[in-house]
Amino acid sequence: MVNFAHLHLLLNHFPVIGTIIGLGLFLISLFKQNRDLKRGSLIIFAVMALVSIPTFTSGIGARTMIKGQPGVSDALIQRHEGSAMLSFWFIEVLGGMSLIGLWEFHRKSRQSGWNLAAVLVLSLLTVVVMGRTGNTGGDIRHPEIRAGQGDTVTEGTIGSIVHVFEPTPDKFTQAMVGSKWWWAFMMDLHFIGLALLIGTVGILDLRIMGFVKQMPVAPLHQFVPWAMAGLAFNVVTGMLAFIGMPVYYTYDAAFWLKLVALMLLGLNVAAFYLTGTFDSVEHLGAGEDAPVSAKFIAGSSLLLWFAVIILGRYIQVLQDSISNGSN
Amino acid sequence: MALPEIFNTIEQSAISVWIRDTDSLFGFYFILLFHTIGLALLVGGNTIVDLRILGVASDLPLKTLKRLYGIMWLGFGINAVTGVLLLTAYPTKALTNPVFYVKLSVIATAVVVMVKIKRRVFDDPSLSEEAMVARGKTLAMWSLGLWIGAITAGRLLAYTFTYLLYGHLGVLLFGLRP
Picture: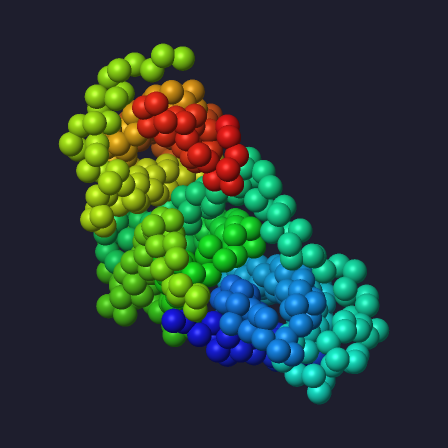
């Protein structure tokens, strides 16, 4: 049996504390006008956005493990879920903006004004709403930190403002599965995003591996924003689907293995760009061979993306493959 | 509506039963998986060619993309074979669904466009890159639109069928009828 509570408690440090660190470094980079530090903070935001995905999805499993136990209030759990549903989207948009900012650094060696403003505002807001998510989560099991008496839901100043924007979990879930046409639309976008992603990343990976060497590498790399768009489509539609059927996905081994593959792809991308591997292939012309390390990264990237497709398809097959403690 | 008896005959055949009912990992979902992979190769490849013709990554020599046609035809082949197998497993479900015919028509048109692009843009070695782009622009836009349409039609099949099997009405996700 997977211990989702443990996983959730382990992972939740990243979106809550990671964003604070990212924001701190981002602000310092602005004051010191340090480009490398700024790039580093954008990388941190992007990584935190990625890790927020399994953080969010492990919540249902964590809930199941403690629900109904003495001292555990359903109302406090609901409040935390609603808060998480708000802050999750903030951190994902922040992650998306950060990826755009990183792309701008690559193309123009500087972040644009609008992106800087967007990242600044979003990161400040994200830290606030994530802080509330952490707080409301802590309240579930820690009576000593609660604002109110016993397990009544009492809001502080910030809480009462943010609370207005938090969705009601059951209503959000219902909205996702209420209409089959909406579900069909989301799945349609998911497949279109998949085609976009595999096409663009695939051709770059194949070239680096040495298969279509008549193409120079640098122009192929210009398709990356389209890959990011495909990724954005799929993270959004994928997470909306999860919100629509949270228990179904939580106890499905294929879904979790798919997330593992996605996290490994995050590592893969980091390895590609942060170890100088990209620099070693960026200017390869027609016919030129890439170094072995680059081929390895490109090969594992392609393999992992196919694993994502395969596991995604097998979600339907591996329903109920993880025990929920009562079956 | 009286269903053609042939659907029943197909569904009772050994291969059809095997695809639907086997416990082996290589049954229906495996075939469906390869249908998705074929889609990724076929539509992914077309997307790169179309986007390039429409001006993305303009530093990439257009001529070099001719090589992608091998991958695209491989994807098409995978989907033709897996498609026939899927149809063998659920003929009533597909052939009584108008969306299925829409899907096939859109795919046929998209493949015609794909071949047209190959002939007009890539097959004449004397054309300059600018000339190639000019000849392919309209076709490339149609291609993108048609492949999006093909994916959409394919996805909608799961949500619009009436019969799961001969004589058996389908029960869709969320218990909603088409």
